[in-house]
Image (cartoon, rainbow, N blue to C red; front, side):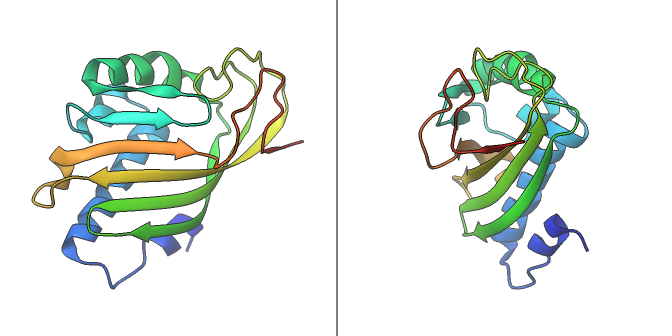
Length: 166
């Protein structure tokens, strides 16, 4: 069983918690496994927001998020991107994932490293993702969005950050 499967193997979840977990997993698939702006947006409400706190990227509402996902996030994802799960906490209306986000900085990543040209370095960044669902009846229709942060200061243009690069 891989690490993500282990996080999902909790059998003590309520139906609402399972629905939120399943929706978040679908959202991640739409971002990374089968990258699609429209499919990613379909997992979110019209007035959803995404806020990458350290660098203040993301958007509010369908049009800003379409712009963000189609021009900055999905096409600026290095091919060797991986996420190593650390912890997942699921409440009735909120899911919190702690992970290590890993990639080789081979392409521009203005959503994560604004203004920094590719360095070719391997990067590992601890992330916390917070996903909220405002209504329990239909989580698919009401996934609000996610805020992603490292819990530290923003990355500077030289690549100095609370991350580990090799």
